[in-house]
Picture (cartoon, rainbow, N blue to C red):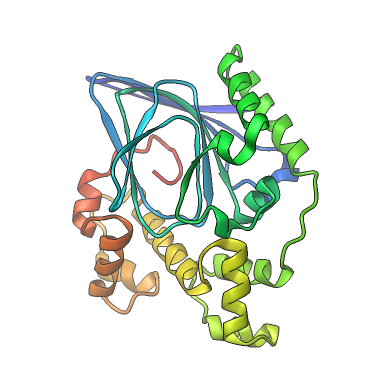
Length: 282
């Protein structure tokens, strides 16, 4: 098992991320690498998590997190999973944290959970709430593991076993999701419905049942996720160019999505963004 480590040290302390590539058989179900994360700094850290077309699972190995979702009271969370949503979440640590993260594709979440994603949309749920005893057992084994290679091996065994089970899903809805994802949401929903020979109304109903968002709302999330990717490593972004490249009518249109999905202006989002140390999506 090959691991990759990135490390950041400054006057406040040390943060490191450990990456592990999943088994190729899991490519359809897990986006990117498994991630291990440790942080030991002298001040609280807040990460602003914007909506993305994935379902993140966090297995906590340290102190609990404090989560603040837009329009909701803050609360404490240990290990949790977040369904597809259209709002940002502030994830706060004391400065000392340790966790593992797995980013599920919607197809992976459908197979892992065995329920339509409408049931978890716009919700943050404890791991044992969605996986029951199996989730509690996995969390305990990850916490008790001797080192990172053992933790990643435990994750791998768990997912290979869980994804071996089949689950009936709408092939048409999955086809629509794949096409939207491939184009970062920049494809007309009407064209996809026409290709299927479905009415717009039928497509919306089936898609929302499977994934928890309507096709139009999922496309907005994908488009904004593209914007966030365009900002990685860019100290002085050209907002007009980014807006055009990501399918926005103009900068005002882009600003409206920033207010909804990030709770800030584009400049405010950049100013408050924590360094990602090579971690995708931060």
